[in-house]
Length: 405
Image (cartoon, rainbow, N blue to C red; front, side, top):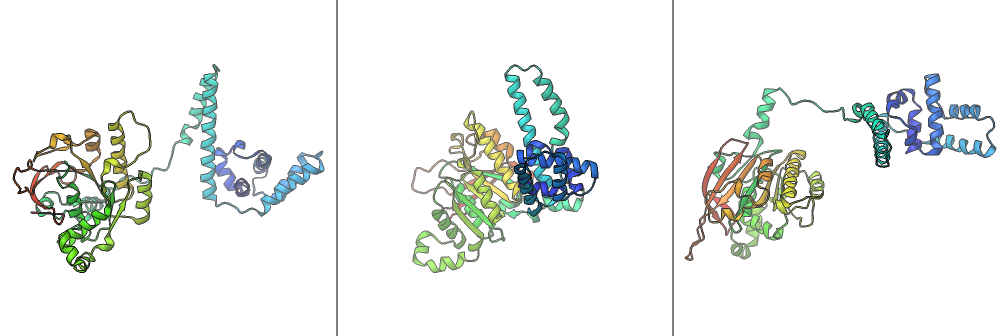
């Protein structure tokens, strides 16, 4: 790459544009002499330089060079002559990256000098930072937020969101849209995964609305989850599907290509990010979000959770998709019909701070008789989407993984 970079710098305009960030130290020793010669030529002649020009200038500057030295330099010039030129814009980015790396080395060396008692190192470091800070910091900040009122309205319109398929819920919280992050939480065996499945696969759900749904499971195997999605779509129990699988498949066929499920027990955020880049989903469900691996060292578990949820929010923004993370409720929510985000397990404040929407599912205490209570209480305790906070009462149909009014 070095020889190609030198080839690009033969152009006088490219050299002058990148000169403030050029350093001899970014080149190897054998190419450093060509770089120095190139700089002198551009300064003196102010025109494009040819490889043979550099050879002639070098012979002039080294009249007593040995035959071996002349042959070595001639070989470098021949390599330069036949090398491919790098595109100017790419060369500029490469040089800037190398320059930043060299500044980092200078700072590191000054730090070592300070640790060894060099009293002048601090002043040199301050001087270096003052000279380079404006150039080192990024200067491409993109366009500011638009003032176009119609664009602003379109971004926040319900037309831009995937509707929740529970009528009493969507009446108050229509749905969730691109770059928005929500949390579904409940105690075990309440039906939080069933709620996500119902949102995605039941009639009128995200998939039927045309969304490409990515369901990432790191708790139970997604083969079970996929069967529950088929049940939610078809309205058929497992026994009914076993008796007539062709009917279930025919009903599920309408949304089959819009629901992708993956087991991600060993995945980290980088892997999820790469997969989202590949398939470009409209909606992501992570079941369960707390168990996603995230790199870094943390003093406590709540710090890890806080950073994880911040990263999940950024994931939704980066891929411009809706993201719903499923989480556990703490023991405070046991047997409660009204629950709020203070009952989230783990980093309560850290989780709540990142979410646009928090949905908690409550239920009555387990009945002592053999008749289970299928009443569920969908509590909206944080809502930056519509402002509604309250409780919607509905029923779960566990045999088909549906929530209904």
